Amino acid sequence: MSVLMVPKDKIVYPSLGSQVCIWIEENLVHGPGDLRGQPVRLDQEKRALIYRMYEVYPKGHPQAGRRRFKRCALSMRKGSAKTEFAALIAAAELHPDAPVRSDGFDARGVPVGFGVTDPYIPLVAYTEEQSDELAYGALRIIVTYSRVVDDFDVGIQRIMRINGDGKAVSLASSPDARDGARTTFQVCDETHRWNTPRLKSAHRTMLANIPKRYLSDAWSLEVTTAPSPGEGSVAEDTMDYARRVAEGDLQDSRLFFFHRQASDRHDLNTPEGIRAAVIEASGPVAEWSDIDGICEQWRDPTADKAYLERVWLNRMVRASEKAFDFEIWKSLALEEFTVHPGDTITLGFDGARWRDSVALVGTHLQTGFQWLLGLWEKPENIDEWEAPDGEIDSVVAEVFARFNVWRMYCDPPYWETQVATWAGRYGEKRVIAWWTNRLKPMAYAIKSFVNSIKAQEIHHNGNKDYSRHIGNAVRKKLNLVDENGEALWVIYKERPDSPFKIDAAMAGILSWQARCDALAAGVPIDNKSIYEKRGMLVV
Image (cartoon, rainbow, N blue to C red):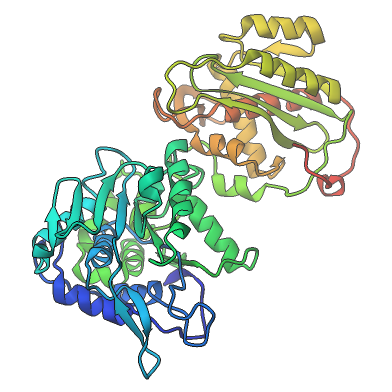
């Protein structure tokens, strides 16, 4: 079994977990599914998770009796009933008599549980269509068929205590300023899908709401399946954060994180290896799962094996349609690096004037270090938008003044006049229109970029926006092959109207191609390695 759990403690903390488990099993039923309406029986893993999530500080501690963890995140494979699990906890947090907060300790030092006064519980999904179907939908069924139903007024989009002093609500975005200040517990559901600027902003707002109800000891729960690397989702950010805490890079005593996946020892080319991996990733869930049905999906020759590995084995695996290996890309980040004024660089410029985004990426000729010089993105909530050409022109002028720009490759559609202006200002041999709609040259430029990533010839400064665009790019095969007979491909957004932008990735490819052309032209560089050039980061 491969588990990442933060923190891993040698000290046992007191917990309300056993009381919460007893209350859930005595009062609640299962939600939608084969066990709908039947009494809840928690498996050992979920029982242990509740115990950890409801740990409190012991007697004698300055915060004795208060919750130890303010943010909890659970990552388990598809079909683990994690959404229902979150709904069961929400039901307990909502009920006036559930023992979810500590009211001191008994003579043995065991915390005494009581209910929250005037709870406000937003259960947030990633789309409007899903807001009533995920955790809130499960909560509504659980409450409706449980013995505590008479304690609530159950509605389509809100569940209130019968006397009106507390409610749970279904949302597709973060609580507004008024309601957010009242939050006592909240659920962020399917956070591997929370990868748009709107949802990531909502997550930040929701976390900021938690400290506002001090007396209620508010907290937050995220549930997810393993995210796809490079999409920049909340789940991916949370996992990266937990890893840094586990490795000692960050100190955070208020985070509890649990991730279970299949270990790497299984041979996924054999039925026996697949079955063993699925069972391991499932944990106690394997007892009631259709393991044979899950394993059968690997036999389909058209199946996306990377997708199956991510959702059923709960591994962070790059989807097969993704253009670049994001795990390798992340490993190429350098925390400190100096590009000195006067150094020779190449530039790539790409973007749509009125739609998605515009990006300018630089590449250091000597070392292959790349960084994002400018990014202008259309805000998600604005229909009419035009890239600020004056601001873009100023950034380009500053770059040409600061560095020795050998060439700037620009994708010209919608920017023909601006590109011509730059060519007239800086020289036609330095500013060149490089049309990305030429499929064969574009495919070979991408191939060079991919091979350089694999060979670790490219480095970058870890900029999240540039990396997000790299992670968003998907591949589209062409009816063309290279000299070795391998299919060529180009990059696109996942769909034309997708909010996941890729223009910085395209600008990075153009900038890299310009560097390759500089090397082929014999432009002189010195022999110092990239590690000898480390220093302050260029921004």
